[in-house]
Image 1 (spheres, rainbow, N blue to C red):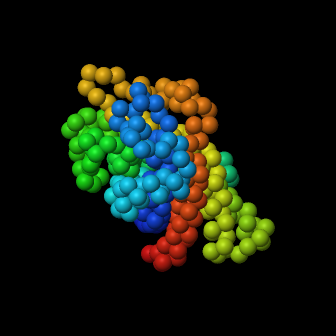
Image 2 (cartoon, rainbow, N blue to C red):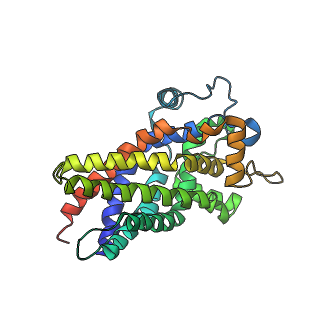
Image 3 (tube, one colour):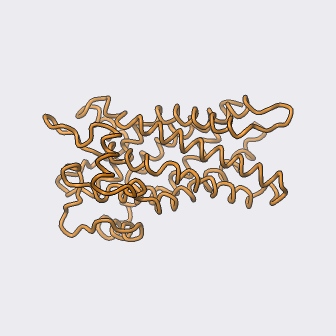
Amino acid sequence: MGVKGFVEGGIASIVAGCSTHPLDLIKVRMQLQGETPALRPAYAGSVPGSIPRVGPISVGVRIFQTEGIPALFSGVSATVLRQTLYSTTRMGIYDILKTKWTEPESGHMPLVRKIAAGLIAGGIGAAVGNPADVAMVRMQADGRLPVSERRNYSSVIDAIKRMSKQEGVTSLWRGSSLTVNRAMIVTASQLASYDQIKETILANDVMKDGLGTHVTASFAAGFVASVASNPIDVIKTRVMNMRVEAGKPPPYSGALDCAMKTVKSEGLMALYKGFIPTISRQGPFTVVLFVTLEQVRKVLKDF
């Protein structure tokens, strides 16, 4: 039962991650907009011809025009590894806790327990998958740099090897506190709200247990997760992508420093930068995740 939950969650997560990768890339590019040059020695915000603070469609079109269609899938190998490590772990652990904490008499799991299970599962999953997360952010952001400054990682494995060699193994867990916090919030809000909304729909006979219910519950869960996690996601993206040069202080000393500098230089709403692509990605991602998960469960129900 326990292993099965990991397999089902892993398959669904990889399918969802790959299918929504271009939207995630646009989100990352938008979250990096507006940083002052002093805080982003690795960024190309000052590249001649760049347009600051543009919307998701413009960002997507610009990537297509300047970098080509393949650029929309920059870092997809890191996405596969991240989903394999992070999402497989969180989905599997959540499934185990859900089975363990469900009340045998009623067959239901109280919302508080769902949230607690999500927090625990998300935190553990994020700690396991952080190296792939850092690599993914860097690979997605690389196209913003001048050609001479790009990292040009050939794959997620190349990224991890070079980061370990050039910046130390600890660089693979850069921003890990943010990753863990974000994952706890996302997992708790996403998985708990999906289960809760789905149960409510079925209990009130609004819809039958089928595709319509799965899509409705999953899209609502994606919206909840987006609102809850976007501020942490912005800070996480910036901390992970910063370049630390020898002999120079890092652009950000930590998550709090990054948050304060971001709010001071760009305003409070900068923490919701990239929200439209976040919900545009989180909505479809969550829908694909849970719809695929429900189908995979049907296929593997006899195993």
